Every structure is written in structure tokens, then in C-alpha cells.
Length: 203
Image (cartoon, rainbow, N blue to C red):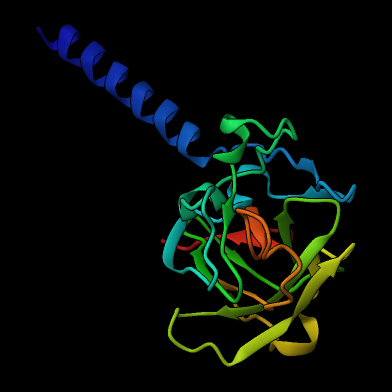
């Protein structure tokens, strides 16, 4: 009987040891590369966690889009294929002339790092003008960090932030340039938003 108890205890100790070792092992991060429809090839060092995870709010512009109106289409990694069919139209949201979209990172935070920090994947040969703001808490939007348009789809937040600051929220505001108001997709068409420089969120 004592021998059986000893064997059981030994087995339990070995199992706990294996479990502890497994918990201590960090998963390997696989960087991702993605190309915008404007031809910019970008690398996201933190891989799968880099993309916006949730829609906080969506205020369509005027005129508003007649198609591609689901703001959740802007979540996750870029998936627009350029086929211009109904399935492809579901991969982005047209925010309308002067529209506004607020997204949240949940498993990661946007931080300042070397080079460009934030990438906006907008559909078309040129990025329609957008104003970009970021926030730590989703309430204070005083940090407007610039504008994307034309061939420019990335933002360097360094000139606007303090060292060590971490941001969970991004606001995209169509700059009301009116370039696509004669179509069913007025304003910017957002496929994805990614944090190039990012860290895992602390629980």
C-alpha cells in the first residue's frame, strides 16, 4: 500500500513539473507581412495580435455609403482580395463623407517604436484623406496624430506622445475631401487597422 502511495505521489510530482515547464515556455511570435492596395508592403513584428479587435462606435457621414456599411469589416487582418465582387465588398466599411469610426485593440496596445507605428488599410489606388487620433482610455481624444492620404497609409506617433504611453483606441475621421461622393462608397473605405509597434496587453 505504501509503495502504491509513493508511486502516485511521484507521478503527481512529475505531472506538476511538466505543467510548470509548459507554462514557463513562451510561444514563438511569428511576424506578419501585408501589402496595401497602394502597394506598400508592411511588416507587423508581433504577428496576429497586431490588428484592431472591436468596434467602439461608428458615425456614418453624409452622404453615407449605400454598400459596405458594416463597421466590423474593419476588424482583423487585411482580407480584401481586389475582386470587387459581393464577397470582397464585405471585407471593408465605407465610412461616408465626413464619417467617423472608433476601433479598439484588446489583446495588444499601440506604442511608439522605431519608424512608423500605425497602419491604415484603405481600399483603392490612393488612400482617401483621413484624420487619425489615438486614445489611452477611449474618452480623451486630444491626441490627433496626423493624416493619411494618397500613397501614405502609416503614422509615426513619436512627435505626439510621451515615452512609455500605451494606446488602445484609434479614431478614423474621413477628411471630407469628397473624392468618392458620386459613388455608393463615399468617404474612406477601411479594410483593417494594424499596430506596427505594439505590445501584448497586460491582463
